[in-house]
Structure formats: C-alpha cells, structure tokens
Figure 1: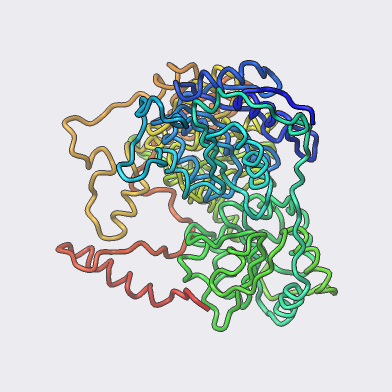
Figure 2 (figure 1 turned 90 degrees about the vertical axis):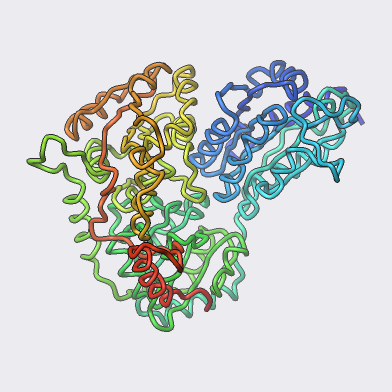
Amino acid sequence: MSTIRLTAAQAMVRYLSAQMNEDGERFIDGVWAIFGHGNVAGLGEALERAGNALPTWRGQNEQTMAHTAIAYAKAKKRTRAMAVTSSIGPGATNMVTAAALAHVNRLPVLLIPGDVFANRAPDPVLQQVEDFDDGTVSANDCFRPVSRYFDRISRPEHLLTALPRAFRVMTDPAACGPVTLSFCQDTQAEAFDYPESFFEPKVWRVRRPEPDSRDVADVAELIRAARTPVLVCGGGVIYSQAEATLADFATRHGIPVIETQAGKSALAQAHPMNFGAAGVDGAESANRLAETADLVIGVGTRFQDFTTGSWALFKAPGRRLVSINVQGFDAAKHGAVGVVGDAKVSLERLSAALGADKKSAFDPEARLNWLAKVDAHCSARQNVPQDYLPLDAEVIGAVQRTSTENTIAMCAAGTMPGALKLLWQAPEGGYHMEYGYSCMGYEIAGAMGVKLAQPDRDVVCFVGDGSYMMANSELATAVMRRVPFTVVLTDNRGYGCITRLQMGTGGARFNNLYADCNVEQQPEIDFVAHAAAMGAHAVKAKDIADLEAQIVAARNRPVPTVIVIDTDPLHGPGEGGGGHWWDVAVPEVSERPEVNKAREDYVEALKHQNLVE
C-alpha cells in the first residue's frame, strides 16, 4: 500500500479538496477562517499550502462566518457546502449558535474548531475550559447537542474514519445538518503515513430514497376519499428539487398548495395553485383552506408551530394528516400517516398511484382576491402627515414594485419574516428565509452567502435595526470581497416586533424599544455613517418613493448598498386580512387587567388545539 506522510491538518485539507458533488464541483467550496493559537500553526499552514485547491476566506466573527456558509448551502439546495474553522475557546463557542441554526434547518456545514492538547502536557492552555469532574470535556462539547455528527480528532489516524462519516451526514438528505470535527491543536501538527487511496477524488451522490409502496397506496386512498385536501409545501420540496413535480401534482390532481417559510417560492406566487402562506403569518386564502381541509398533506415540512397555528389551524372535524418526508422523525409527527421518502420521488409515485385526474373542492378566485388585498395593503399611503412613519408593509411594497424575476428577498428575524411570508410575492426561487431558528444577526452574513451561491441573482436583504446591531461586521467582508447585495434597514428604534407581542399578551411596554428602556439618554444611531465606515454605499431614504429610487440605483454597484428608512414601531406591517393565533403563554396571575384579559382569551384559544390524533 502506497502512503504519503502528512500532518493531520494537511491530510484533512487534501481530503476536503478531493470530495466532489454530482456536478463535478468540490462539495466543500472553501473554508472560512479566523486563526488563533488553536488552529493557526496546524490548519493555517495546511490551508495556506493548499491555495486555490481549497480557498480560504477571512471573516470578522466566527458565528457570522458560519451563517454565511449556511446561507450558501441553503441557496445551493444542499448540493454544496462550506467549512468554518476557529481557534479554541470563544472562537469555537461563537459558532455554537450557528451550529444550532444549521441543525434546526437541516443544512450542511463543516465546523472545525481547534481544541485542547490531546497529550495534555501544557494543560491548562490559554482559553481551556476545565471540567472538575471529567478530564475529557472541553468547551467544544457544547457542539454535541447541535451537531448531526460530532467527533474529536485526538490522533492523526482518526481522520480515516471521521472524515468519511462527516461527508455521509452532510450529503444524506435524511441526516443532513452540521458536522463538528473538534481538532486538537497538537494533533493538527502531528504527521502520519496516510494511504494515498484516501485522497482519491470521490463523488458523493445525494440519494433519493423510495417510499414504501404500501404507504403510497394508503395515502392515495386517503386522497381519493378527500373532498377538500390541501398540500403544505415545506423546504424539503426545494432541497429535493421537486418544484416542478409539486406544481404538476397539484395541477393534475386539483389540490391547492399553501406554503411554509422554508417552502415559500418553491412555486411562484403567480402559480394558479399557490394560495400563499399558511399559519400564524399566513394569508387569508391559505388559512381558509387549512381550516376546512379534511386531508392535510405535508410535503417536506416539519410542521413548525408557525405553520400549524400552534396546532389550532387544521380544525375540520375528522381531518387526517399526511406527512411526506425523507426523515422518518418528521413523517410520524402528530399521528400523521407517514410516507418516508424523497419528496420528488414520493410525489411521482403517489401521482402514478392516483391515476386519473382528481378535482377537489376549492375556490380558485380566493387567491386572486387575496393578492388584490396584498397589493392594496402594500401600496404607499397617500396624503400622510409630515411626521408619518411608514409601515413595514409599505417597505415591502416598495421593494416588490422594483423587483424582477431575478430578485431574491431574504431575512431572518423580527417583524419582517412574518410580513414577508405573508406579503412578498416571490418568483420561483425568489425567497430565502432563516426562520427555523429565527436567528437575529443572520441577515447580512446570510445575504453574502446567498450572493456567493447565486451571483447572477439580485439579493435584497431585509434587516431591522435591532438585528443589524447584533451582527453587521460581515458587511466589511462583503466590501473587501466585492460581493454586492442590497440591505434595506428598517429603523424602528428597538425591538418593535417583540414590543407588539408584549402588548398583545397584556404586558406593559418594557425594555424593547429604546424609549421603554432604562437608559440615561435615548440613542441616536447613524446607521448610514456606520455602514459607510465599513465601505458600503449607504443612504437614508426620505420616504417610500425615495426608497424605490434608491433600490433601483443600487443595482450593478460592485459593493453592498445599505438603504436606511425609519418605520413605525407600534403598528408593524398590518395583517391585511391574514394571520392566525399563536401559542404564547400568558401569565395565569397578574396585577394588570390587560394581562388577565389576555389570559382569558388565551385559555379559550387553547381549547382549539389538536395536538394528538
């Protein structure tokens, strides 16, 4: 057996550079790195040596670098991914939030935090977290519950098993998620005689598991018997690249489609079978279908509480639940009749089993009536007073009117995710939302990841002032790397979304908007100057008309553009005829009459939950 002597870090880099997807591209497109004493000498040397065989990029924060990598994988429909490396200590634990985000959203990312010395000779090293009762624990054990696969590389030969396992997880549609390879810093520098065959190029196919024919037959019978079925489109449709298959299935069998956050834009909003967003942040047209459906057919969805109205949305007597999902865990939720298999293949098999076309009972005009309401609701208000602050719906309308079939709207947390799901009329593939973890600070880093994955698309990032304040530094990275996108920064001077939730549950305004915080002076943050200081083109829009003009002007710039606009913090987007109850627990005892009234309403709403079949 021929061998080659390499350090463990050099071996890892060489292996990563040889793992391919089915399109002949490296599955790991490159490595985001912030170096410290835990990875600079070992992995840093190996990455410098690799050059363009596995390119390295420097970010500003370990968490946001990982957000960029995750957004890239999502925009690539999980066909490619990125790696992220940090030193030990805070650099590593900064990535734990991103790992949780990827875990919830079932997205591949390879995290390589440095770790303590495997030989323990210099213990405790700088930044080492010592466990008084367990000598094997380090800070990186925090990654265990938020990783699909976790391994600690404490000997060079561990790579021979750990790396193939890592790729198996990242390319498995059922197990897909973050992989953490905790890399002891002395091990990175140790040499080993690796088999040359270990570094031969390998193609990782993303499998399409076939559903069980008996499950398909059972669901086909349920559809034949149903009078008002509805399809719930989740992110699994997009990851399976089943968009056209879903459209064909819905059209042929006459079953309307409603969307989750992750599934939105699998069908263009203009598609006649797309009735819009479902659930808490759902459209009137979609929620009426969900409320009256005698058969709910989830495709690639994990049935999150926003989608199901905390399991109070699907309320037809005797209704049945079907879940088509590549992951058996999801397919069995809430007593569903499960079909475990790839979304595209499962829909094809189910369509063949149904045979003749089937037409269910629904009003095709309902979606058009809803879209007309959306257009009216998102239009710019006329004859407003001089001190008027626009609603988020008006901001969305401005971006919508200036958008093209090439535009991708993206966001993550605060008011805008619900507003965009409800109101944004996306072309196919024109929506990117991180709402599984609803992670503030994802937006700007995520926008860079989307643009890197789809450089020919026009990426518009919606971000509130609160989320911008949490994580904005990758704006400087985007400037340095010349990755252009447009940021629409809505400034409502605090956390407007949570203020409205606080008030809606009877609470007093407290500690969310700056005006309601215990501060000596109200802040006057100049977001335009801040973004410009990092090299972005930054402007403040005077009003909605100016916002439209600035969005158009932002196109074709070589650097990101940040457009700031002041918005109303207390009225949000306005629901425009949609929405549904959401289970947010209200205190059972309070001195506030408003809380007591909210509690009464809450207890009444709980009666409509249908948690178990």
